Image (cartoon, rainbow over all chains, first blue to last red; front, side, top):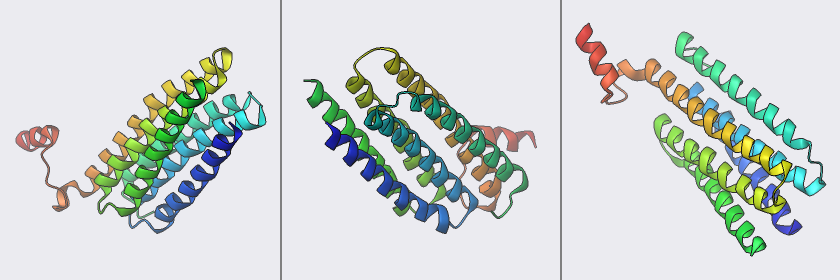
Length: 88
Length: 111
């Protein structure tokens, strides 16, 4: 059963690296924001799986706080793009 | 039975994450990338976390994971909607998108 969990975290880390290509090279600010949002969700699932591998169940509280911070940050940056229209 | 269910759910979630990542790389436009990223966020996170709920098998940890699922399903569509709205308000009038939104039509009639 550990094999599936370890394969899952390696796969998720690989897809996070592929997403960071779009976050670095995105032509507009919206592309970078979409990529950062997807990376945040993948990190939430990654920390959940790591908490089951290490048998540290209080990592799930960390997951809740991380999801909250990721949501607030993407909301604030979307509002900034909508108001200012800055080239980020 | 539990192991088979967990393998099926986890591989489905990883498949959706992979497809969302490929869509994020290959699709040509901001709106299509938003579409692909929203599918990846909601369904992939739901399937992977459900696999972990099956693995933990009831109790307080499953309740916390259900709370994570509820929180992700509230926040991720909201963030995606706000990103698409910001993109539309920046490039909506430049002729880049064909606007068929009823809100924009009502605003034009008011003006």
